[in-house]
Each structure stands twice: as structure tokens, then as C-alpha cells.
Length: 166
Image (tube, rainbow, N blue to C red):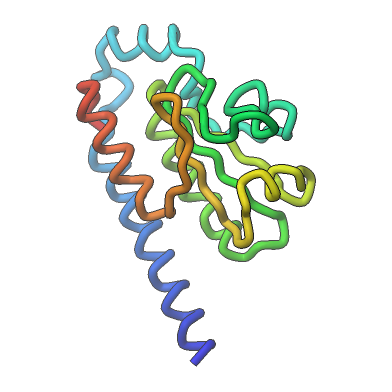
């Protein structure tokens, strides 16, 4: 039964990756077709650089939340996802390219961070993390856990609200 479960999870992850890649390729404009407004917004935006930035607990406290005092209040400027992973975790390794593709496709609207739980153990205790990958979604001064499949719907909804076609 356990082997069957692993294969089902692998197939689902592959389908998600395929869907994300298809979605990103089909909805992206060519660089020549982008308007100046989008370019200016990206230049003036302190978050959403199109990369997944690796951060430490100290940087998490400065950029996301001070989990020692108020772990549920987001202190950043724009919406963000935090991928909490370990280097030895198989599902984390499978999720990493998906998150990188999302970060590239969401440049200027979302910031993506990753934090190695083995190097930053205090975060696990603060957020009661018992399994990984563990993804935090941060927006409107709130922080909550989301599942990987929820990320696309959050991105679509947010970009639709602010008028960006993804």
C-alpha cells in the first residue's frame, strides 16, 4: 500500500509541474510585448525579484515575522511565500523547481523565500512544524500555512485583483 501511495504522490507532483509549466508558458507575453507600466512596477517593487531567496532565521525575523514575539503578523511590504524545507527531503526537492518557476512567473508581485529547517531549528518550534515541505503564505499582515496546490489559486486571485494578467 505504501509503494502505491508513493507512486500516486509522484504522479500528482509531475502533473502539477507540467500544469505550472504549461500555465507559465501560455500566459506569458514576450519581452517586447510587455508594457512600460509593468516594467516600472517591477523596478519600483522591493519584493518579487523573480528568484527564490534563501534566508536565515535572522533574516526571517527582519523580512517576514518576529516569531519570538508575534509569529502570525507579517511585517513585509508585499505578498510572499516561504518554502520551509530540508536538503534531505525528497518531496522538498520535487517542489523546488515548481516554486522557482512560480517565482520567475510572479516577478514584481510576489516574493519567494526558502529557509532550511535543519539550519534554523527555532522556526520549527515557533510554527509547530512536524512535516515538510511546509509553505507559509504572507499577506495583509497575516501569515498562514498553505498546501502546494493552493499556491496557484492564491497567485491567480491576487494578480486578478491587482489587474496583472499572468
